[in-house]
Length: 295
Ligand code: SAM
Image (tube, rainbow, N blue to C red; front, top):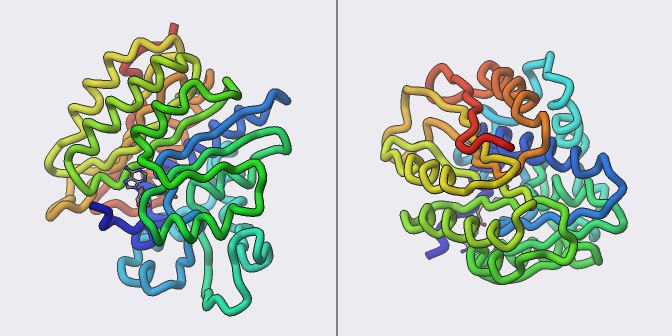
């Protein structure tokens, strides 16, 4: 069942928290000349028009990226991400970003995970993308097909990830960002990442999850606490006690295996800033803690 479309939610508070973390990890990978690979198991359509009917229907981006852009005084590690979003302009890139002359685009625009990462790839780096939704896949294909560093698969991200382990370039990041349309996604995500990590023990793995009233996230953390990675397993959550009724998120979480050294403190500072910058259903708190300490 593929009912989820990220266009309704692009640029919301959960995206900002997740994408800021991903951007910082990418910045660490870029610090060394050695090539890296990034694997995005649930890629979405690539980038989003926040002036579209989908975005207008929920308006979620206004409490996310728009609020963060307005806040000011961002921690210095957050600034490159905010600058990248402000400068993101698919129209200027044209066909290389999948824009055709008769497209009816309004803007502003928000890059999804594939485009935040694409803009940081160097000549010798690689990106592997998986997406199952036929329409989202087609949009993604239009926008990346001219880039030889990118390999796109219409394939199940859980199975696909395990099948491609370990990657040819043994330095890099896996992002798993499921839509959690169905409850089984929690189990599949934990099992797929565990199996993939067993084949690539020094890879960095990042799983996103929503914090809902139903509390499905507790089992995810328990499963990740069993992954005895040398670089540890970090949990970072931005949440509120209020709201979250009728399946709405009251928070957002990340589980990160082998985060770069120093990432935990840098990202916690960003999380504290995000508590005041973005808008959740109630007052927000941020917590970063190790489920498995790094050795
Ligand atoms: N990672 C994207 C970003 O940050 O811009 C957003 C991804 S969205 C939350 C989840 C995507 O996963 C949707 O586009 C959905 O169609 C896709 N999807 C759902 N189940 C999938 C599966 N089993 N394998 C691959 N993609 C899947």
